[in-house]
Image (cartoon, rainbow, N blue to C red; front, side, top):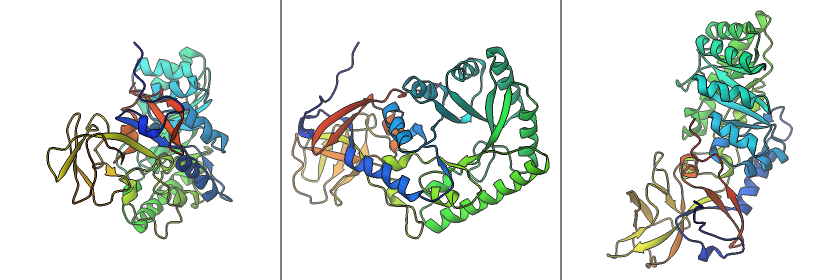
Amino acid sequence: MPRYLPAEIGMSLAEVDTPCLILELDAFERNLHRLKESLAGRAVKLRPHAKSHKCPQIALQQIALGAVGVCCQKVSEAEALVDGGVNDVLIANEVVGAPKLRRLAALAQRARVAVCADDAGNVAALDAAARAMGIRLDVLVEINVGANRCGVEPGAPALGLAQAVAACKNLRFAGLQAYHGSAQHFRKAEERRAAIESAVAKVKATTQLLDQAGIACERVTGAGTGTYLFEAGSSVYHEIQPGSYIFMDADYAKNDWTGSGIPRFEHSLFVWTTVMSRTGKAHAIVDAGLKASSIDSGMPRVADAPVVEYIKASDEHGVLALNGAPGYAVGDKLKLIPGHCDPTVNLYDQFICVRNGRVEAIWPITARGALL
């Protein structure tokens, strides 16, 4: 059954139904170019993370501006991007379980696909899946550079796993995944810089062991929006993986960028919402709650209204504390800046793309709900 669309091309923003996800194209495009310009003269490649947008149209624009491909987190995300015309995907995550491995190997028959591993048993399973499909699969060893999530420890453990990959006939050791996720949201730039300096030291120690063992490490990949210029300037990383820079969210906006060299990207992604109730003077109720904006990184912010606060979310309602601000009558529409862009995007079927107050395009979020 077709889903109801909240907008049509050519419609004014005021006519667009709510709640929906709007993308301000001018700000989005400036963000794309701003990141490209910040990398001028640096010997790193851009492989942006598609988990932020889950949209082939956006991925293809990033590639048109010089990205070598994209990252994904799940096989189903990668399938959606490849189906949409992207032919180079790194699944920057571990893929475990026979059904997923079969799909991964099948996908590698029709696009350039690589995957991460941090376990010898998983390496053996990857080799078996690749052998069954008659392919040779690129595998990167993920190392723990400080996030303490996935990743084998750097140094000798990473070397041992790289040797296990290299020994498999249907796998090819393709380098190291070295992403410090938690460092992206350390508020002070110097804290982020110090975390990446520590990560770089761990990568160097590992690549030195690989070199001594005669194993070529052609690629070290990692980095995010909060730190990417630190990795880019390290002479250790070959690829960077920022994702949120295209949208920016309320949580990233809390970072201090002073002295980092990283440009201030603009908010381009908003939840468009309507005031649905005004039963008191102090508060307004909007139609965007938990099902419209993720709050795992904090509440959304009301755009262009610094005194108004989004203070509470339930399933279908959001409560605004007006703090004396005028307006906000029933039927008024406003923009919310999501607290965390990635899971908020995953709540919607499409981006309503707006320029100069009118809907210019509608881009499907084809990898929405791609969990497998």
